[in-house]
Image 1 (cartoon, rainbow, N blue to C red):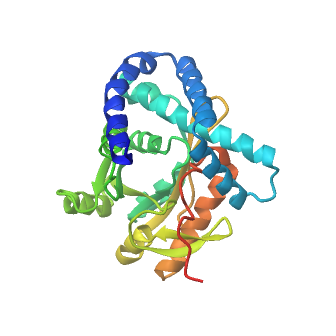
Image 2 (image 1 turned 90 degrees about the horizontal axis):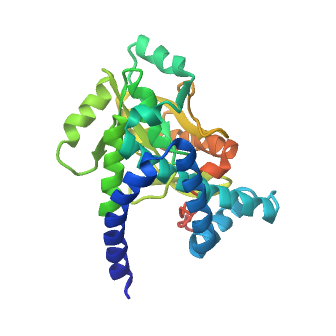
Length: 297
């Protein structure tokens, strides 16, 4: 079976399976959702050798000082956290954001309020750690609509699920090159009850620069830096982390003092992102091919 046939078959099976999981797993109490997520993560860790191998390779790049046993443990926890994100998404679809939102708290919101009171426009910088989409619930509860901005996914099913999560959490999405983008972008940049949320921690098919990430050059999107510098917009780091009890904490940091050049600004935002991942290494997606490209020489 070719890869394209395999992907179509997998997508068809998932389209049948996901509604069933929403009506079963999604309606469980959180304890059941959590047990399902951890069990699924353990199974994927044991069976998906390609992603496990790639994750371990990347953990060795990022944490060469750790033992192989500790990196293996982090790898397993990474699979479990990601599977738990999926399980909580099922609950989000089945029971709505009020149920899941009870497990979301915010720290450092005063940094956002400071910029709002000053009449300053801003965007939020986050990364693919924990169930980061719940950042939208934390902000919606405080009268701030988040608008995600990024490239349209090549996977139709993944795109549908992401857009569905955004709708349920109260967020919106700007996809490059799609209709309605200019109007949403103007609203996000207006500073009137809305803000962009952007992620730059993955190597995607967009304009970028080489900046250090865990000590190795990584091709990093420049969109956030370009928007911030071109429109005089402040950048507030905001990251989600899951604690041991399963609660989600959205932590907002003071706005960054960005250098005047795109590369320097991107490097600073990447440095702040790395600092968060170092604090919660098991909650980032280590199988992503973050260093798949390297600069010439």
